[in-house]
Length: 192
Image 1 (cartoon, rainbow, N blue to C red):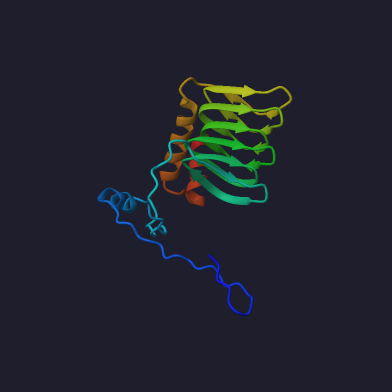
Image 2 (cartoon, rainbow, N blue to C red):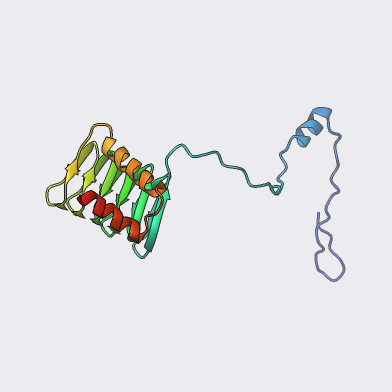
């Protein structure tokens, strides 16, 4: 309904007040079940369970490392390493990687350059892009066509060559150091 006043203008329509009808208990219960949207509560960081898949570390192409490196996860070397690597898992020298020193690991894969001996308890795989100067000691050895290899290969079924060489190194490390005069006496006594 519109009201007209004396000025000839129409007034705004009157709004009838809404009548609130009583609600039944079921309606009230349904209204209370409407999910509320709440901001998430801050939580403490969750501790992660160990991952089932093995982790892999990568030494990038710009990395240069000198010294002894040891690890217990898969490793990919794309940079330059001078020293020795002792590894319990798989070690890969990538196409951009270069290594000067001995490598000890369960599985060794070479795509890049290596100058040093390779000792694997499981296998050594020298791929077509590889250049290897050194001896290989492993139960299984694969050399792809096109790979450069200069050295000797010793294959023993259980990786015994690797274990024997490691035992000799441990024995040498535990032996007391020999001084210059003692070396001369040892050499002269062996010649007689």
